[in-house]
Length: 76
Image 1: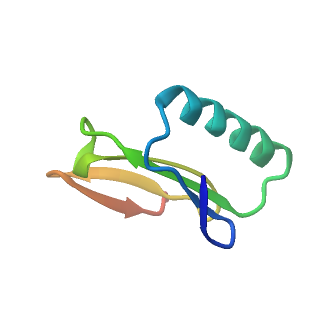
Image 2: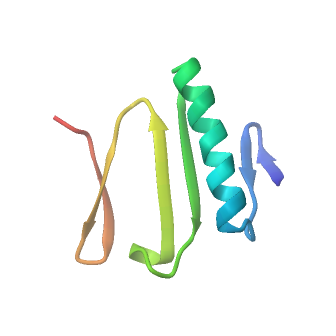
């Protein structure tokens, strides 16, 4: 993975297995020390806009697919 900015890593060709294991580790770390937030974005032609998005942490957000557009909303 390439670090494009401090603590920002990208990998345009990460396969689903590696992505799943990476997300499991990040979830484990965040569960043990729940500070900050984690966002994972990847190419997924079956998702809205052609990208998949997963999030952990604060501030909490909910991703909504509205007519093919991702919108972000704070849960009530």
